[in-house]
Length: 394
Image (tube, rainbow, N blue to C red; front, side):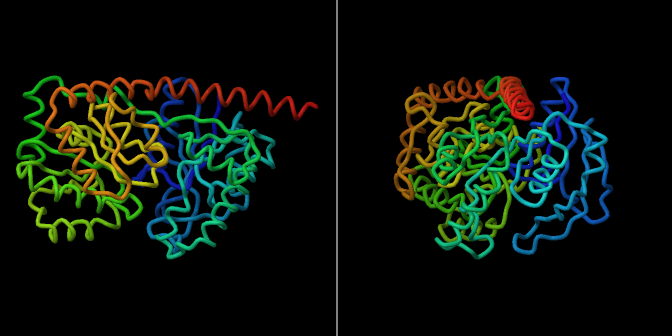
């Protein structure tokens, strides 16, 4: 099958949606399908047609999106028409409801091609970035989001919580849940204790370590993780906190760690590409923590589960779907660093339970393997095409 993927964010950009779109394309190609990706050029001089690991990528002319630093936008005016006619896909799959997403909607209507759209996250949680974090703007954000996805023949959501919210806000089209996928052969537990000691030494871990991984941004509530760690550190001074990733809040978080007098125990790794060092960073830890209230189905947590990390998360949005209590982790109260600290101390002092949750995380992660999720995606495509053709012929 030929699949056209449209997305406003794609590598070399580093974020969850970019990596998910890339991983989806890569997995489809590995399954024998042909994929073309349409996305914005990071720089105006980027070539419009490049190859990335046997993946054809069309980079569209773009301008800086001044309302959101680091992002770019194109004009959805049919700029991909010639390439799309030549490629002639069976289905279009869009990953973002912005300028490239609207180009996908336009191509679907002009070329009569079924359209699948993945809605990845709760965009209203990101309004603070553009200084529009008001209730009236949240309503407008949802209205825009629903209006956009009602152009699709099928909407896919990585979590039940986001799917339910879309329906609640007025989505009229068919919606299904398709979780993000991970490479369980790359992200896996260490084979022995010696290997564990080596990765800990590589990252400067003193003895034991807990971690957070993801974009360092205000909506992730990483400040609460650091505040919880400051409480933990008083009872476990040899413990490290590793913060894996980068983002606009890094300087503020580094300052907070210094203000709380734990900066010598907090390791900021910066952004790590999807290679051995990222896997090693996770493997150097004993437990994963997140206080975020805005997560949908984050790859970072799935990858942490795949290497066998027990979880301490808040019971919010998609995170509530990633823990089975007494199987792979426990929930802490929302906006309560003291409770997070208490739960972490409890687990770190209970080796048997920690090992049980480690095995539980790995076992649960197997359900999100690239192969399983790609098979489900193909079934969604096939059903959407079949229903589209049936409506067209009636």
